Amino acid sequence: NAGVTQTPKFQVLKTGQSMTLQCAQDMNHEYMSWYRQDPGMGLRLIHYSVGAGITDQGEVPNGYNVSRSTTEDFPLRLLSAAPSQTSVYFCASSSGGPNQPQHFGDGTRLSIL
Amino acid sequence: AQSVAQPEDQVNVAEGNPLTVKCTYSVSGNPYLFWYVQYPNRGLQFLLKYITGDNLVKGSYGFEAEFNKSQTSFHLKKPSALVSDSALDFCAVRDMGFQKLVFGTGTRLLVSP
Image (cartoon, rainbow over the protein chains, first blue to last red):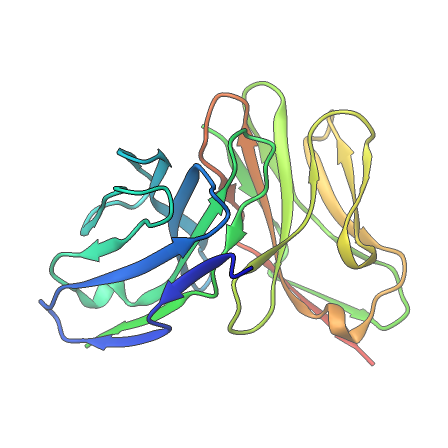
């Protein structure tokens, strides 16, 4: 059982480049979300989805796009990378209901030069 | 909007001693509270959750948490710390009306031999 899989694990980009961070889960979870983790700031929600075809903004959505065409996949797109987007990105999923814990991937470490 | 505060950046404890990691929260209505642990270069792992009911919640790896409604706190505890408990601990809250999970800034737990 793979759980939540994120690719790539590491990436270095130049300012202005675009890229897509991949996230896939095999637990048939309805809810998926993207967070970024920065020192001293905990985890901040970027975007989330409550099901295929439905997405919404979190706390820090600017500069990022998402789509949810299938239950399993929830890619995060950086449109034009900026140094401020250097961070560790985590994808998480959970089954429906506010009492369900989220399952996290191992993260993508992204550096923007 | 819901929020979480973890007032300690770091907690130091000797192996075998009891440990407490503090968390206070703010939500409208009844809270759903969670503790997660993060080991180096890994995603967050679920430890335990509070929904309603007993004020002392037991979770993974011998951890427990004490819910106090009047003080709006949900402190993480363990009767006897292990060196392997050293990690970054996050408290999180979700209220009944929202899918979003809001995290605290994290507390680094260091257990010395």
